[in-house]
Image (cartoon, rainbow, N blue to C red):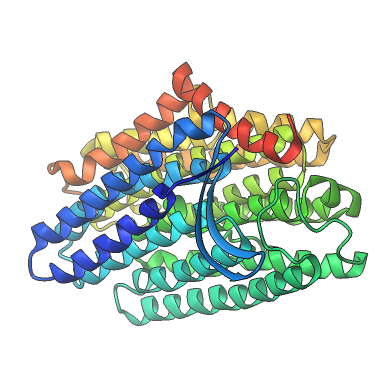
Length: 492
């Protein structure tokens, strides 16, 4: 049942309002940071307050405007949207605290601009999560690209500016193609509203369907770093580490895979993707991306670049699950959206602590660093084991479901891809742990973990990786919400 509510609008606007407060507090660091924490906390409370209604089977809606009769821009909070919103709002609180510690420790310049852009990025992310139609989705999707550009180029070095331009060119090109696909869909179907099970059946010829599918996937695939439109992501690692955490776990790339989940389940629908063969086509591209990026990660000595290629691979886990168009695989994709966010943000937080405390970026220089930063490297180890699919961490559960979905789809090649990639995950992440806790390297390292602002965030997110892997309440709540989202697409 659909229920009108203003809460979706409030969840979107709270960080937009905070962004204005941050600008007004330019000269007072404490007030500026208070705006950040207050908005993050209020946003989470608003999102959490909508959860009981979703579990009761309701959908919360808010009409933004009516463009023409029948074409309405609106917010629509369903199980899939609130799942993404919960992930983003929880991790924003932790990332905000980490950002304050990181910016103070490194005495970064233009901190007001940083926190302003950060708040706008979360505004856009929440708008994407709650978009009830393709037009609303597109508006916030483009807002996200513009809001995160100053973050990627934050350091203002030549490398940072070039990385920012590259990111913007990729994003805006994808946006233009996405807009074309949306316009074409509206022309053929007369609607842009997200429809569980899809809205395109019978609207396009087979050749046209392939073209519009390519446009939609390219439009969201850039942010999802799908091969071959992934190159912007490793380049963006020049940004400060909190930005990398934002890009990889809270917004941007997660908005991309969320968009593909929407397109698969609410624009094309599983029946159309299965009968047209487009699902298997997307699955093939995703499978290639998983293995390609995993192999590229093995070759990287720079820690953040290794984590960036890991993200490219892990995002395609989600895309592959969606492309297999079976209930179990779609469920696993939704679960991995959250679990990967918790694990990857932990790894990036740890990389940031290492850089802030030692200014080391290359893995080859990190021999023995675990003796100086034991809590940080313990959190890194938890994130590594979770991302590699070891029980009892949360990554094991979502990877198990994805493998189950591949079996359900009789996609034995794709099952082999998942299993092979998990071995590669261990191959490129465990050596970092062994190096850190091994004998000291040639570089003299003087560091300590004094200062709670930087150290507790990776410990907090590592704790979430454990809790969502062993505590029945957290596991079952997450699975139940993901199952409601999956059943809306595939039926009970």
